Length: 470
Image (cartoon, rainbow, N blue to C red; front, top):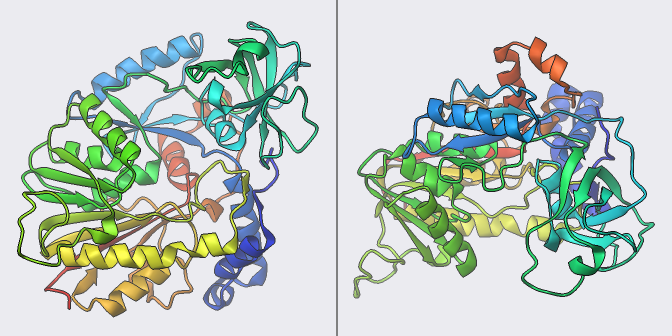
């Protein structure tokens, strides 16, 4: 059930998305009414969190069962003895699923209000507490220890430090303030900790702030599927071309049992530091992270050896992951996106530049996996059609595990080609209310099915390079 309004988009962006989801191929297959219903479902589901929180176990340091037991104890503490089921995904053995409870409708709103930015609000809906940098406004007399109601300023209209706000705001739940209004807006840059500890969120989901940090990595379900599809083997040389913050990089290294070499590139230095921190935290030594623009990762001259640093010679890697920069239109929850159509459409050319570099860097017989966290046809199926036409030496491969649905109609791909893709589509099912009772009554198979269907929007394609692509 929708408890929040559908995602707020600029009209030009909504029309662009709609044109993709109601293209001629889809209208011919589904009919106009069903296509319209699915598009509206997409817009509503994007503003709500997925049905499950997904965490990946760092199998390099511990067994899944050991970590599952530790996590069970942790959740018991967080929820005062309330027993949450923790499921091991049958097709992704290193992935644990924890159901999200909600929306909870009988939460009494408090007179004392805290307004948070949209990004902070999205994190709260997925189990986070409110950290000080995310707070935009607080009631005039708020003190530490006060019971407060937390709202998201989804359109970014609230002024920092305001004492009240009457614009569009979405109720996220109640919590207890850790600091007074005066302390929060004192201007001290070192104030970065928890500002409001959530006690009655609209969606009840575990907090993973500093929870088993060496053993767990918080990751969306499709993001964990990607590395399994890449299927890296011990001893190989693997490139993660756009790697930050390192979730997939560290997953690749763990699947290789930390044997071989995983090169991670990102062009923003702070993000590269984050990759290095995550590798250190998870005890992985096979990762080498560099601050480097992926579009320039191909070495064009043979004169100077870069000693294993970017740029790289052609045909240097056994496997390459291109988790491409994208419009992010599959992220959930997302109640408002202020991007212009020009911004949304700017990613396709960049993705093609990166893809071309990846093909050149891949050894013959090597595997290239392309993925995005968006739902647009232009950044997904259209890119596959372009790649197959542009690089005759690439073959589209079946994926294992196959957790998502098949590709979307509209890019001229054959039914067989569409079956070789994975599209995680938030329009695939209507949102459901979830309470503890319904979870206890559901079978494990039904819960896993729900986790696979009701997740972020995502896309995966897998290619093999059969010969040197000209």
